[in-house]
Amino acid sequence: MQELLESVEFSTSGVAAASSWEMTHRLTRSDYVSAWVAEGPRKQVCGVVMGAPPLPWLGTVPGLGRAHRDHVARCIVEAEAVAVAPGMRGRRLGHELLRRLRTDCQRQGFRVMLGTLLLKNCNLVGYYMEAGFTVLGPGETLSFSDPLGVVLRRPADPDVIQAWQPLHPDVRSTHIQVPEGQAVPVIDGALPAPDYAGQREFHQDGSMTMRAMGQTVTLPADLVEQIRLTRSLPVSLHEVQSAAGEAELYGMEPLVAAQIRKATGATLTDLFSSPPHAPA
Picture 1 (cartoon, one colour):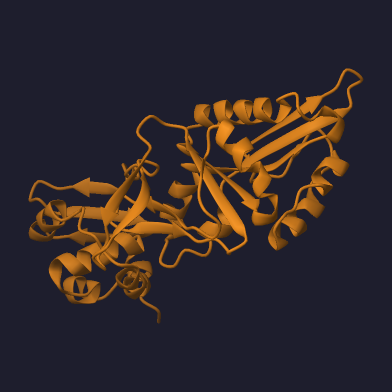
Picture 2 (cartoon, rainbow, N blue to C red):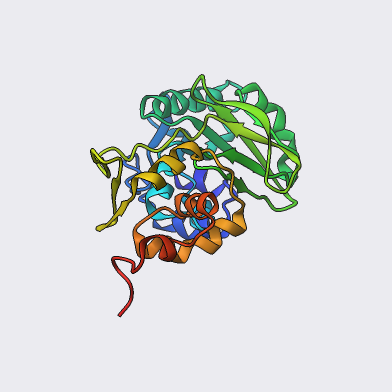
C-alpha cells in the first residue's frame, strides 16, 4: 500500500496528508468518503483509489460561508490516489476501481466526480476519457453554476489538467452569462439549491424568520416577496466579498446577503438596524 501511494504525485498539502494516513486496508482518514483496494491472489495490494470532497479548494473560495461550503462538499467528490502496481497494469484494474468508487459516491448522493493530473502525465488523458471523464485543457478553470446566483470557479496551474464526470442525470455542461457580460462554460446541475428547511419560518403576515449559526433575523413581508422574485439574481464575486462581513453578523450565507443587498439597493444594517450578534 505504501509503495503504491508513494508513486502518486500529490500536491504539497497532499504530501502532508499522505504522511498521516494509516497505511493499511483500514484507510481511516476522516475526510475520505470512499476508498477501494484491489488485492492479488496472494492478498497483496495491487491497486487503490480514494474519493474525498475537494476541501482544500473550497477553503479558498472567497465569500463562501460554512453552511454553503458544507453543502458543496456533499455534492462534489474528487478521485484521488489512483494507483495500480506496475505488474498489474493493462488489465483495466484502475477502471474497475474508478467504477466502484463512482458507484459508491453516487449512492452517497454526490453529483460530480473530479480528477486531476499533471501535464507531464498527459499520456493519461485518454485513460481518463475512457473512464468517463471530460478532460479540460492544461490550466483551464472548472466552473460550477451555483443556485444562489454566482459561478464557483476552481482554477488550475498551467501544468495541471482537470477532469470531471457527472454522477447525476441532471448534471451537464452549458454556458451562462456572468455579470461581466461574457458567456462562460459551466457545469450545471452539480449544486442543487441547498435545503435550509427548518431554518426558515414563514409567518401569516408574510414575514420570514431565518436561523443560521445560532443567529436569528426576521425579514419583513415586502422584503420576503422581493427576495422571492429575485432569488436567481446574479451577483458578482466582488458583491459576495463585499457582503461577507455583514452576512456573518446576521447569520446569513454571503451569497444570500449579496442578493438581498443587490435586490434592495441597501445594506443589511440599513434594512434590519442593529445586527443580532454585533461585536461589542
